[in-house]
Image (cartoon, rainbow, N blue to C red):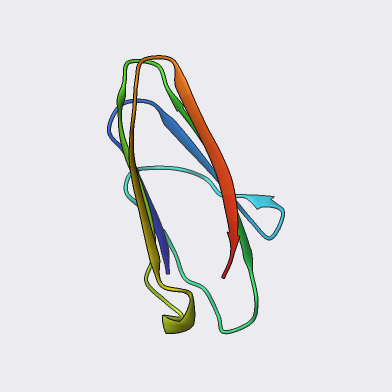
Length: 79
């Protein structure tokens, strides 16, 4: 399962090349095959975001970052 939360700003998730519709918090079920998760985050006012992968167990991770006003973050991971 993938979930995302953004305190102040916008987070965009792309799973296997398909943009995910975002609402907060957002959760997406994952099956056991390999996936690629990418993110792009914009913080217009400064704020914190969290991206969590809770299943499958072999892909568990949590990323939490605080961004300043006007900062951006992007990245990706194979899950």
